[in-house]
Structure formats: structure tokens, C-alpha cells
Length: 133
Image 1 (cartoon, helix red, strand yellow):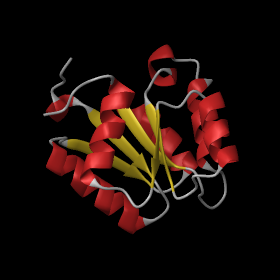
Image 2 (tube, helix red, strand yellow):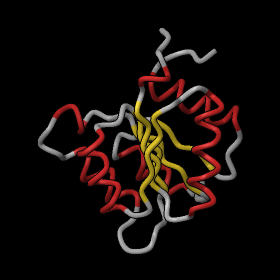
Image 3 (cartoon, helix red, strand yellow):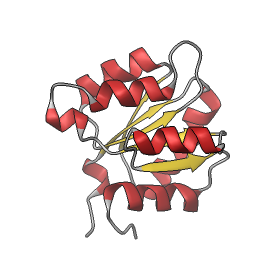
């Protein structure tokens, strides 16, 4: 299956501006046109409800609440379309506990920083069950 990437809204949640900028540029290079950003869990939740993205990339370790709190909140949201949003965890933590926690929260992908164009493409393909050109 293929998708029109120009129509898919992508939300990036990471407290590091450099990471958001880098991933945003990678997504634009892949063909996405609607990329939104948030620098905290609370702002990410607000953006997810406002934008209704088709895909979310979320960092795990952020000041205050972490990415697992975000995923838990989204998955338990009362709106089925928001709760079902594919989420790819974005982290420098490849430890067993973090990966296990992500699986328990039914995330759709796990991407370890630093990311590359190809690793982002593969994560998107798995999360959205599509093939990118």
C-alpha cells in the first residue's frame, strides 16, 4: 500500500530543538509536507488533539513527564481516532526495560538516535504499514 505523504500530518515531540529540526528536515526530504512540533508531553498532547496527526514521533526521556506518559495518555484518550494514532518512540535508550515498556504500550515503532533517512523511512513503513518510494 502507498500513501500520499503530502497529506499525512506528522507530529514530532522532543525536548531537543536540534533533534526536532533534524527529524523535520528528514521528513520533508522523504516527502511529508505537514510536520508539527512540540517540546514537551503536555504540548504534544495538545497538538495531537488539535492537529489529529496520522503519525507521531515521540522522545522517551524529556524533562517532566516522559514519552511513555504521552503514549499512555493518547492510547487511553476517549476519541478512537486519536487513540489509534501510530506512534514511533524516538530515543537514545535502547535498554531492555525501555523497549519492553514501549511494547506494552503498543507503540508502532522504536527508533534509536541518532537517526538516518533510511532508519526513519523504515520506521514509517512499519508504523503505517506502507511502502515509501
